[in-house]
Image (cartoon, rainbow, N blue to C red; front, side, top):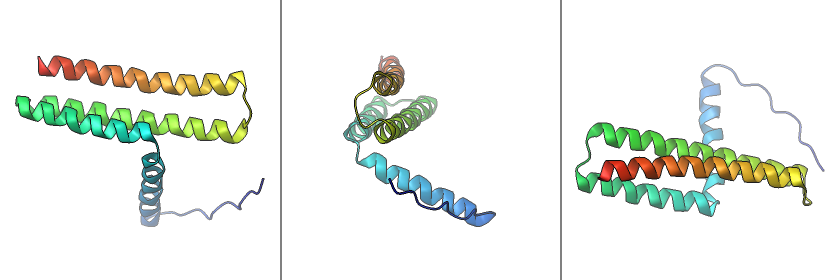
Length: 122
C-alpha cells in the first residue's frame, strides 16, 4: 500500500473554493454508482408528478429536502462501501454488517420519500 503525504492546510476564502472542489469530486464519484443514477431519475419523475398535480410550494420544498437527504445518505453509504472494501478486501461479517447497515439507511430514506410522495399525490 502506498500512502501519499498529507496536503497542506488551506485557510480563508481558498478553503471555501477547495471545499467546493472536494464536493464536486464526491459528486463525480457518486455518479459512478448505478443506485445514485436511478435515484436521480426517480427524483426527477417524482418532481414532475408533483408539478403536474399542481403541488404547493411547501410540498415541493419538502420533497426537495427529502431528496437531498436521500442523496446525502447515498453518498455516506458509498463512502462506507469504499472504506470497507479498502480495509477489508476479503469477506468478513463486520464488512457485511457495515454495508448492510448503510444500505438500510438508504432504504429508510427512500421509504420516507415514497411515503411523502404518496401523501402529496393523494
